[in-house]
Every structure is written in structure tokens, then in C-alpha cells.
Image (cartoon, rainbow, N blue to C red; front, side, top):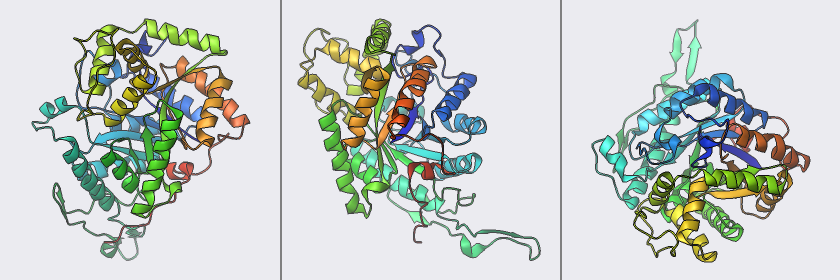
Length: 428
């Protein structure tokens, strides 16, 4: 299986930073370096840094205070050697030329370890930071499809033979091996070529996390790795199959796209110890931040509702389709109150919480991996460093003993770690 680390400096649990000894700042680069080195010690495939462009002081601490991801990952490339380095950059509030250039640069700096999470940006408040009107869900995905095509086209503007650097002839760049893109589309007009040569991976790895129908189509057509939101094994298996079944429509096979559900593991040496840790985390939850996370995920203000009442009937918002659908399904399946849903969302921002001993957690991950629900997992530690050290030091060895996970790195690039071929150039 493949393992990614979802990097939030204060942990994925809303109140993880309150645990004794926990990292309490996502601006502490020394702590981030230590996390990266721990991930490499655990032979993880990649570190993934989510991002947003809107600050809400009531929300999760690491959603409000964080370093700019490409700057951070470029620095982190200097203190890691093998692990992939992925980050979110918006297709709604960025431009394709700059994004293509940034990730091509990171791929060169890191020796072939860059990955771009192409997201559309859900939070409407972001628009005010860019002097724009926030596009609706459908338009955001139309823009995203064209945006990704332009970025990939720019990455393919140079062949591997373009840089000659022949001192005898004086030829440095062969013009015949470089082409302009000349893209003129509905949303973007980009001439190209990019002013950086073809990258070690050919193209950086493309990540995607959309769970709506347009998001799944975009992932099936363009992504190498898909992060999914899950709460239930049968639902996850059905969603996994649905995505894989889409791939032939775009000339792709199941092995070309990895599906990594997000999971927040709370690890103890026994199941009881793990439950005690989760209970301690839950007792730290403050009502303001938890309600802010819940309201953001559902695109609905819950502050006026009775927390001990039922979960209200809600339509899918124009924001997080996957989170809303998965969480409402669980709430109805388990007859949850709004307080139950609030606690679940606060724990891992709506992601799957897996609590138990190393063997219990390994058993569950193995069931999902072998049962057709995942190609691996995007691990979301509740806090750092202990919450991640527990997974690396206790769970990873069990997976290795069972032959489910690597014991050492093989391959020079992130694509090699993921078992993905180096892409050929797109046709002009």
C-alpha cells in the first residue's frame, strides 16, 4: 500500500495542539523539518500540505496560520531525500503559467519529488482577498479542467533533449525541441513556452480531492493520486470502484490512479490506551472552533441549532460536496444527533477516525486495502509529534511484517515510489 502524510502542523484534530508537548504552531519550520524526517523514517510515499486562502480566527489553528506551501516545501526538500512533496494550489485564484513554473521548479529542486493538488477553492470568502466574485461549483470545475490542461501543456513544452549546452558549437537550447502552447480557451489565454526545462518526473504528480461528479470526472481524466473522504467501508469500496470505472472513458487504466482515503489514526499500545487518548483529545474541543469547522464543511450556520437535536435535512452546499454527502450518510446510518456529528467533525474535520492498538489499526487498513476500498491511505495524525511517531513506530512495522508496506525506498522520484510511469509528451 501507499502512505501519504497530511501535514497540518498542529495536527488534524481541532484541539490536538492542546495535548501536552504537542506542536502548537504551523509556522515553526524546525518542527516541520522534524515531521518530514519522521515521515522518511517511516518510508512514506509523500508529504501533502493542504492550503487555503482565507483566514478565520475561529477555525482550525493550522487553517488560519501557516506558511506558504511552495516556499515551505522547497525548504523541506533540503532536509529530506526520498519523500514526495505535495501541496494545494487553487485553480480558481491562481494562473496556470505561475503554477506550472512553481511546481516545475520544486520538481527540479527536489530531484523529482513534486506533486500539485489541483483544487477549485470552496470557501466563498476567498474572493474578497482577490477582488473577485466567487464562481459557483459548476463554473469552478469548468475552470479547473482547462487550468490543469494548460499546466500540463506547459510542462510538456520542452523535450528531454532541448537543453544541449554544446560548448563546441555554442548551441545551448535547441529551438526545435521547445514549443509554445498557444492556448486560447474559455478561461485562459497562455502562449508559453515555460521558462524552465522538462522536469525529472516529466511532469510533477497531479493530486485531486474533489468528490462531486465533476470532481470525480476531473480526477479520472487528469489525476495521478486521489484523496477521498470516507466513513464507511462499503461506501468507500463503492466510491473506489466508481472512480476506477470512470478511467477507461479517458483512455486510462486502474493502475494509473491511486486512491488514498484520509484517516486520522489514534494509536495506543492497547485499544484501551488509544480510546483514552481520543477521549483526552475530545475533552479539549472548544465549541467555537468545532462549530466553525462544522458550519464550513456543510456550508450552513449551525450556531442557532440545538446540538442535542437531530441533524437537519440539508441540501448539498456549493462547497464541500464529498464531506457533506459522507457525513450526512453516516449521521443517518448511525442515528446521530447534531452534537454527535459536531464531535466527529471536530475530531478530524470530517475525516475517518480510526482508534486502536497497532494490530487493530493494521487489521483495518489491511481490510480496506485488500478489500478494494483503497490503494493506500492519507494519514492525518491528530497532533505532532507523538501522534505521528506512534503511527510510524508502532503501526508501520506491523504493516511491514505483513508484507503490505515497503521497508526501504526504491526509485528516484515520487512517480517511481507510486509505481507510475514517466509520462510521454502530449502531442502539440
